[in-house]
Image (cartoon, rainbow, N blue to C red; front, side, top):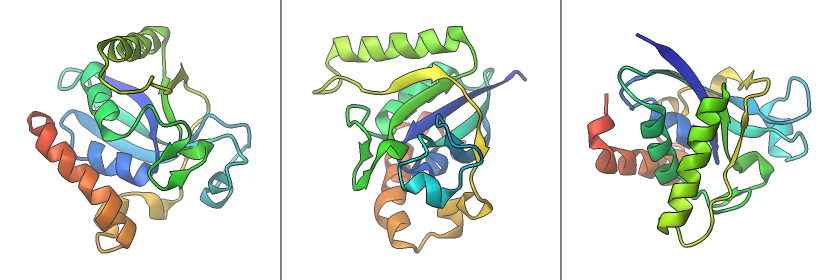
Length: 177
């Protein structure tokens, strides 16, 4: 088993977490904040859009079971990477599309995938996803963990999170745990 990490921002972390919790090879999913300049941010502060942080999920994955390329394929289908600082009704820099890598090789892989997607016309507009080396990760508050599993009847979960999980199950059935 070779455990690696990548941190992804694709809008609200509840959606991203719920999908990757179901993906084979993913050993751990932790919601949090990254990419900003405020020390020890909390959800309330990040939601103001003034901390510079994005809502992200830190993934630990077994590369013998799933590749970073596969993870990024799901990531790019999970959200709209052409929408700057917005995913659906969630608006602000905290909802930006971002990939934070632990090394230059993974960073270049992500950049190459973005270039290939842009050249292929996979999206009608250019991808605005930022790619950077990871910075300090701040775990989200406990109540954000396993959010869909703990709050399945909450309106946002029913109408935003669950449809993303359903799409993942349908489009990426080979990647289900």
